[in-house]
Length: 252
Image (cartoon, rainbow, N blue to C red; front, side):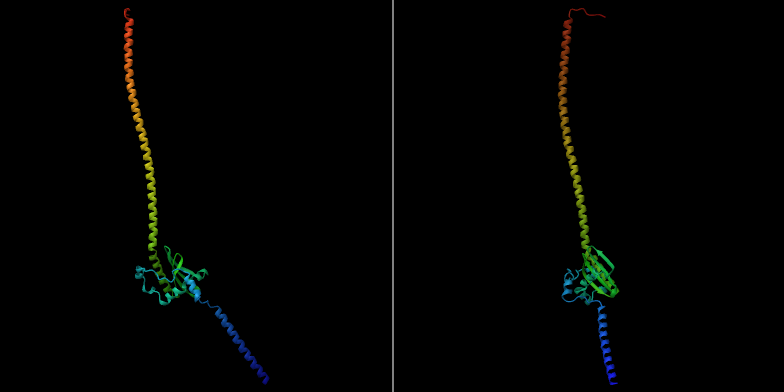
């Protein structure tokens, strides 16, 4: 009996030990299914620092600030998250194709996006410039995400105003320059035609003067020739009379 009790005690201790080991393995497997926490320390700081202007405050946009509802003002936690890790986290998730793009607004080179991570029902609201993330806010509150997205979209409108105006002015200047070039080309053509016309007119005038001079000379020569002809005719008539002198005249 003592021997059997001893065996039972040993078996019970073994079962307790096996159960403990299985519990540890179960806890380990359970933790392995949890999402990995975001990088911390120097790695996270380096990821954030690689993005220019991430930690810079938004420029002053007085009209937007006046129009934005008070609910869109960032909390201290949101501001801290945006400045320390959300940008790098969002970039990593985008490369992994884990996000759904719900809304995006483009205004010039600026824009705002509302993205959704379905596995954790988390929203990411991003403000970007030239496709580089500037501010990123992470929240699980849908209403909050929509409000921040609206504020970021309005900010992108304000920020792009000068850029869009510059683009329009550049186009208008280029159009005006093209019209100037066309006008100058037209003026050059007209001037060339006018120069040709003037040269031709001078040639015509010179030709007319030369022709008139030649006509005047010919007129004088004609008058002289006619005078000579008349003189010759008188001489012939005189000679004819002298030659016919003393001859009977023919009567009819």
